[in-house]
Image (cartoon, rainbow, N blue to C red; front, side):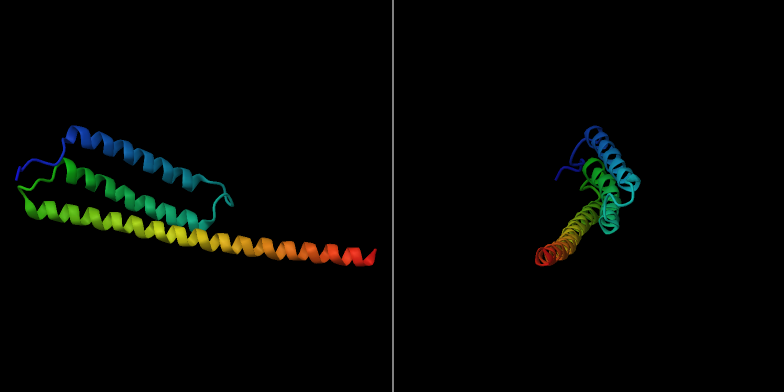
Length: 129
């Protein structure tokens, strides 16, 4: 097996820097959102996901651009960690999905109760006429 890294660092590291800047910008935008614009639980989950991604990007760049099979222990450790971090991002995405479903159900129940109150009020007004 070739002891060279998987890809050239000249390609990998600029891409990693661009991705890190994009993720950091997204996290700053999430933090700067006005209160009430996004549910706090959703914001916390997405910020946690952003932090995990911020650790995953440079480690992936190291795995692609530096780590080689010449040092098998380092190579396996780096890629095992990358896979675990990507798995963590996936778990956080599922948590975000379940949280969104919970928020949707809560909002739908509130709208249903409000509609019921309006319909009862209209029905009682018609009876009074």
